[in-house]
Amino acid sequence: MLSEIPTDFGEVTEDELDREIVRVGIIAELDAINLYEQLAALATHEGIKKVLLDIAKEEKTHMGEFQTLLLHIDQEQAEELEEGREEVEELLG
Image 1 (cartoon, rainbow, N blue to C red):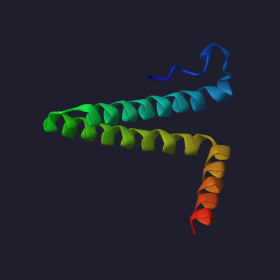
Image 2 (cartoon, helix red, strand yellow; image 1 turned 120 degrees about the vertical axis):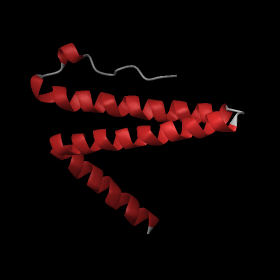
Image 3 (spheres, rainbow, N blue to C red; image 1 turned 180 degrees about the horizontal axis):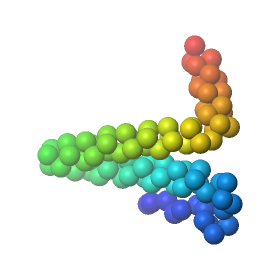
């Protein structure tokens, strides 16, 4: 259900370490979002559903924080993200 850390931090160079830490944070937040939204979909009690969706929304904020950090420390990631955005905009019109 939940992702495993895809990186062996013992094999990561010092230059790569911070980027990998932030990427693991992103993975963890995406897992949390998926988990809470799936649980909310299953919940029969409206209060539980409401709280789970609120928590999922907070995790989306955390995801944005990690993404912003990554874009600050990985210029290639920032450039590729922008290229991907442009490609999607072109395809969608």
